[in-house]
Length: 303
Image (tube, rainbow, N blue to C red; front, side, top):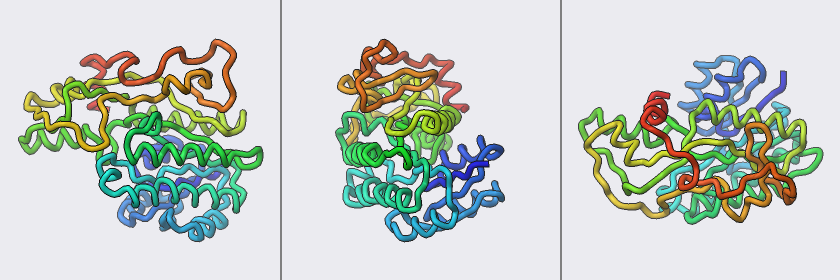
């Protein structure tokens, strides 16, 4: 059984990944939130727990050396767009410098494979969070070698995670409050937690068989946020765009298209130009992909 160490493993996606694949991997979670780590241990007693902050390279090296993981998955991040805009130094400390510490610890302890979780905000970035994750992507891809493989999973919005919009709106409805929406024309790419953890596992398998140096994403639909809000409640208040927000998100930009490869259920971005036909022909964004209908939205809310 291969050993996977998850940096930031007690978050929503880390917990979902552990739940889905606990029968095929031995898991270790490294995180700084004591309560979340304790809750994870209670739910999954076989998971080993270590307390650490990714801003401490020495601590990561000590833990990696002790665990000797076959695979490290880097999920720790400062992920809220508005908080990153208000706290750019902290965002860079966590998302850039912290990621460099993960890279360094993996190389110094000879971890065979390290995969980081990124975001559609890193594609053609326009805010602090997006720029910080774009820098992380470049660093991970640059670190890739034959013996120490590095790769990226580029997510869109994952439903029902801590701090995400659907639980927030459901909470507002329960309190008989208006649902706060920044703009009626806002669209977002969204996929389920199950799809997210499957993307990670598919990326692990692809990296093992083909080497690192790629960014992996998956196919999904987009949702108009006003339509989503109206399914939850008729009481929707438009409050205006927040700093760093944009109306549409891109998962794959037009500039990246020549380097895309479609293999099985993965959209892959590589350094090599794709001269074949197994590639995307237009940018993959919340503006260009198929839109969710009401049934899709209901499944999203209940999922």
